[in-house]
Length: 111
Image (tube, rainbow, N blue to C red; front, top):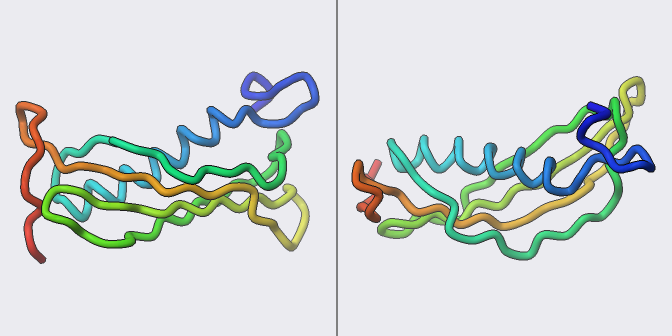
């Protein structure tokens, strides 16, 4: 939306990063079967701007499951509203840790 842009009409990187964190967090919650928290974001790079009206799609990929942590890679693609093809605009690696009710790291259940 226009409120999420700079004067050139590009979406703020922070808005896009928050969407990526939500996507990775959804996956972390499913994998850990509960609460988790972002502990690191690594290797984020912005490849192309996202414009107002672009449709944005996020893809989260679980890289591995540790005893308490989950590295998750997120790719983001944007497509102009009426276009057929999209393009990759950014990606990053997020690390989540499973937490118990007191906010302490906890074991991730085996599936």
